[in-house]
Length: 418
Ligand code: SAH
Ligand code: SF4
Image (cartoon, rainbow, N blue to C red; front, side, top):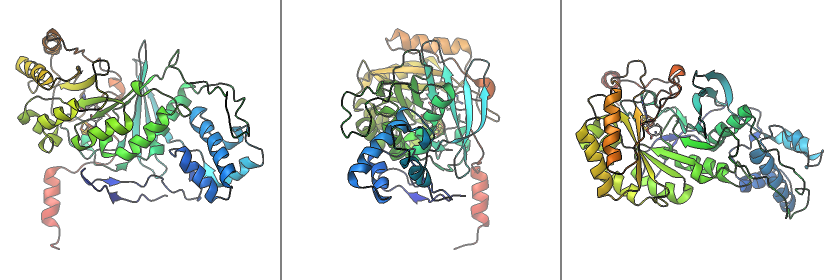
């Protein structure tokens, strides 16, 4: 079994363990999924190709991997036959292993996936009339402890690698049978593939049209890997999904928000969930570190936010906790005070075993929504999806218990003094 090296992230963000970006394999071959074209080229050079060959082969292989979704080097028909075994002796085309696939009565699908080093995580696909959204995980578990979130009861096992993140999208395309079938003509051995039609991936008629980084984990605590994976998703010769169809949700990792806008440039969603320091400190504990004012200032400065590309504020409706008329009015006040191009997404709380909250009554949710709407801010109520298979927001969880505070204190007291 491959081991996972843990090292701290330097700099402003909290030190959390991160995995190296490639998980080593027992057979010594290298998994190409998750690598950009330049890295593939470099590997080909190290393996013995001259610079020109390495460049051409990297270009071809990249296209087959990310645009066409092939899982065998043998299928790369424009690569010379003798070259294909050379590739498969040295490299593999990985996918996360599917441990279980579940279907909800409402059409939502959830996959339990496993990494090469044996850790489980989940991804969810939510089909709608006009779109299909894949909810992608960024970490196995989460370091944060939002009190209403099931993932928050897991400890952080490790960050997902770029390959494991983009691998979720690739697996979904495999499962939905949605790889483009465009012609490969023109991408021969010639260096210059001018006039080649890459058959751009369009949303028309497809099931998978949108991606949300709203699965397990806090994407901005795994910034580099999430960025590198999304670059492959957005690359016109990669999965070719428009950045406008991708949304990254953060609980409020303020120091990373500007970089997310500059280096990834996708739509931003912010898990606000409360409008007072007291309540947000309690239910979204990262608020004790980066408060509401700091968070909303970072939103106001988010590159690319505009009336056409609004920031989504997610707001979970918790009975008697954050759902009063006064809360709704304070929410409007804050959005106006910071002049935010915003929309609000009201999420009825999704229950999980042992959760300390109840969902607000439907009438309360409706009233809250109306108040915000009347102030000219869009505030739809999100229909819960996939609750019957625990696939709804905040219900994702695999093994790896987080120890309770009492348990940690007890262990600390029992530990021998150093
Ligand atoms: N860590 C990121 C993204 C993953 S969570 C974040 O917190 O933004 C995706 C969304 O589901 C977040 O807005 C989160 O607050 C919300 N959520 C978590 N638990 C929930 C629950 N039990 N019911 C409804 N929404 C929940
Ligand atoms: Fe982590 Fe997001 Fe859940 Fe909070 S809501 S515990 S940040 S996954």
